[in-house]
Structures are given as C-alpha cells and as structure tokens.
Image (cartoon, rainbow, N blue to C red; front, side):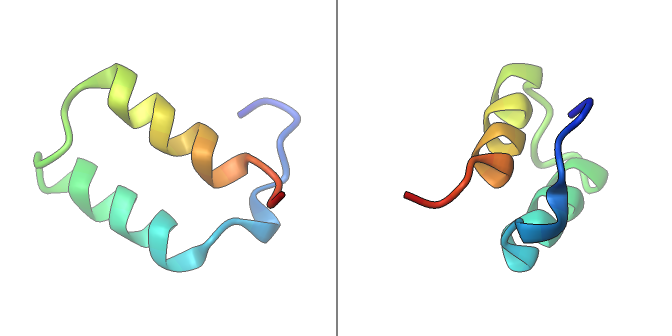
Length: 44
C-alpha cells in the first residue's frame, strides 16, 4: 500500500475486509492482499 491513496476505496468493502481479518474469517495472506489490491484499483 506504499504510495497508494485509499481515499477512493469502496468504504463498505474496506470495512468488510477489516472485520473479516479481525474476526479471523480471512486468514490467507494472498487473499487478503488480493482484496487490498482490488480496493486500491481505480475504477474502469
């Protein structure tokens, strides 16, 4: 996330990611990274 601006990220998706990780529902690092990339990807 270095240099990325999360200001335009989908807030509901970001919240869901944080809750999933904190609750232990999402533990696979590659999947977490993929969800982070998707949040930071500019809309097409």
